[in-house]
Image 1: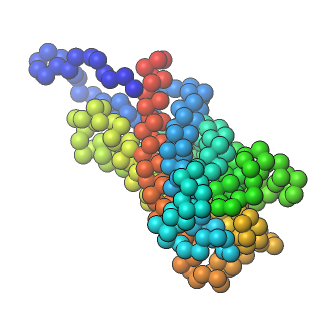
Image 2 (image 1 turned 90 degrees about the horizontal axis):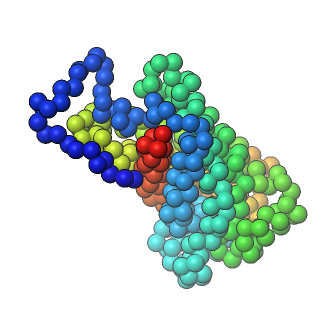
Image 3 (image 1 turned 45 degrees about the horizontal axis):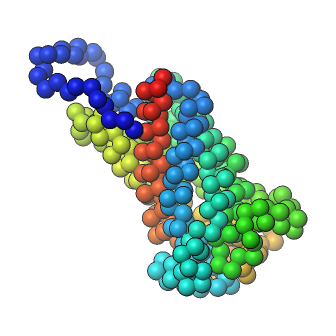
Length: 322
């Protein structure tokens, strides 16, 4: 993003800025509520942000998937270090990037839907109160229901490819074989769980992000416009870490459903959330529902920072172009 080339006057006598009631220019500079962008611009900004976020953090996501999918799979340890060592030993560094093609195909369109629906709902739900956390949370829930419908099939393909000794030779081989052997329903086996996980995840994420962003601006309003990327990245990291920690059990259930029957992982007759939870608790206790929470937080904190800073940078680019 191009730096602001306008001169910065240090002498307050040169320019007198009228003080209007309830006007905060430092907030207006980075607030997304009145950015005046069009729907397609939100979609492009969200698509680019989502792809950069997931591609950059893909190895961490691979480790998380291995840790959550274990049953009778080759990896028996749930430790981050031993899981990483096992992947590197069995497949080398390239093993950390198995399935990245599916991620690229799914993340772009899904995040285009995600952010554009969020901005649309936030604008229409606000009712004039642009700082309402309930509006941010509800808008995020609507956004995730729509985006998960786009992303879930490729997420299933991605997770099956990530597993060690995966029987699939690539994205399209996996798609063809799943369609032939399991039917189209297999692509959406985890959709209900994904929505039930991502709804609270997104509600916590967006409300925390907006609240943290406002708090950071209030701490240093005079430098908010100069440090807007730092503000977005910091707020995004805090929101991502908090949301990831509280939704890990449902993420474990989602991974089990998407990887069932692959590499010896358990297969569930009913596919219900209760059935999966009972199976996990019976085998590993309640701690089994928190498998992979460390790499999940290590993924979502920097991923959210990358995603929000990229998204807001793209929005600023479009604002300048407009």
